[in-house]
Structures are given as structure tokens and as C-alpha cells.
Image 1 (cartoon, rainbow, N blue to C red):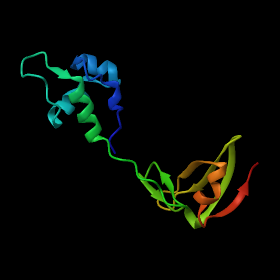
Image 2: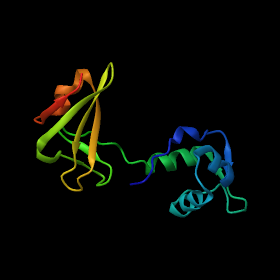
Image 3: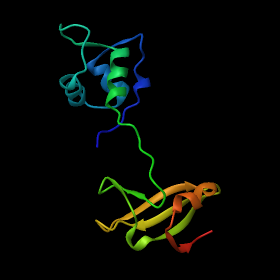
Image 4: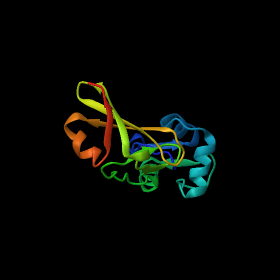
Length: 137
């Protein structure tokens, strides 16, 4: 899974060197070289390469995969990199803030703990047909 970078950090009216892109996006020079190899076109072929801010923003926007909403009852497992239905369909609910709670369960594939933070007003819709074992208030 590729990291998502905010394309709005590159200002359209500015030009950037590779070093400046490193600072703006908080990445190493190797990442900028990989972007260059993957299709980020410099203004011209002369060194040092200069990149137009608008070109950088459109390149990163095209690379960012759109987020897909999860269906009710599914929780995202970071280790498996996929939304999964918790093992045995049983979860715990733990209060996080006055307006949100965590739905916690275990991944049926790798056995790790998984959780999903939801607003209290959306809790019933996000649970779907999961069974609640414990609920802390």
C-alpha cells in the first residue's frame, strides 16, 4: 500500500528542486527519485531538476488511491491490509471520548487485535450484525 501524500502541499505557482520537495513532503531523496522514475516530469532535462508545483500536485493526486468505505461489521486489519469480519463475529466496545467509541475484535486471519473508531451516533450502523461481548461506558 502506497503512502498518501497531500498534493495541496505543493503550491502551483512555485518550482521545487528535489531537495525542496523532500522538505515539503517529509520524504527522502530516494522517494523523489522514485517519483521521477514513475513519471514525475521535471520542467526541463537540465540539472538540477526543477519541478513545477502544479505538476507535482497532479502527479500525487493521480497516485493517491481513493479511499473505499467499509461495509457494516467490517474492521480494517493493518497486518493483513484488508477489511475483515472479526473472529466469531464478537467484539468489545470501549469508550474513547465523549463522542466516540472503539469497536475491538481480533482478526480471523492473523489473530491480531483490530479496532475501528466510530461516532456514538453511528455505532449501531457500523456494528452491523456483530455481537457485543463487553461494553464499557
